[in-house]
Image (tube, rainbow, N blue to C red):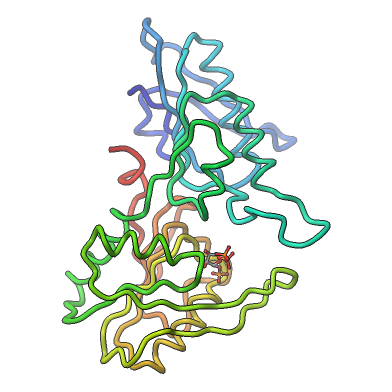
Length: 283
Ligand SMILES: O=P(O)(O)OC[C@H]1O[C@H](OP(=O)(O)OP(=O)(O)O)[C@H](O)[C@@H]1O
């Protein structure tokens, strides 16, 4: 399908130029000479890491629609607001509902979201589906084992939110052992506590923690500390969306695998491997 690729402009079949006006407003000019005469369907691929990304996708939709495209699909590598999938505390917004409402107004024919935080994203976005993290997690484990051959290994679910997804991944990739963990986040302060590992002696197994997002990394530092108490071997973090707001050095984590779904990485830290998200967005 004809694609306008905001993630990788050089690979975009529909050519464009994008820039910011001096007041910060995003803008785009589509090179109409790159468009076919027959304009039926097309797809926009983008990250929605902030409000300007959301606005730009809507501007692109409006432009393509004006240029004659009837079926316009949207592929989102990272969806801002996906973590605010409920009203956390009285007086706070249900951000995901607001953002989904804005995207819905554009009337995309189909919307795909890479590893959304929860199924509330696809429940709120019209005609949407999730692209799961199975292929990414599988690639990360293969990549890691090629570099550090591991005898025994297990998949780790760091908290209740990740549990179902980790079991789904384990089934597809044939992971025999899933370690279930818990943490508690005080939604008023963001403070983490109560890290628990519901398993016995891990006997030096390599532990692959799989989750959607690493923000500050507190979840994974806390769980890695507990895994070590259970005699874990290498502890490896596999997260679809790497924010790394407090850097890439996470105590107790030996290696990190992520994608460029949320951000690009100018220089890559020794322990960090970035797999291109584009590989997982289209089949
Ligand atoms: O790197 P960190 O700063 O620790 O944040 C990352 C964690 O936060 C998110 O879950 P969240 O704590 O929002 O819990 P939830 O699954 O209950 O929504 C995410 O799924 C990770 O588990």
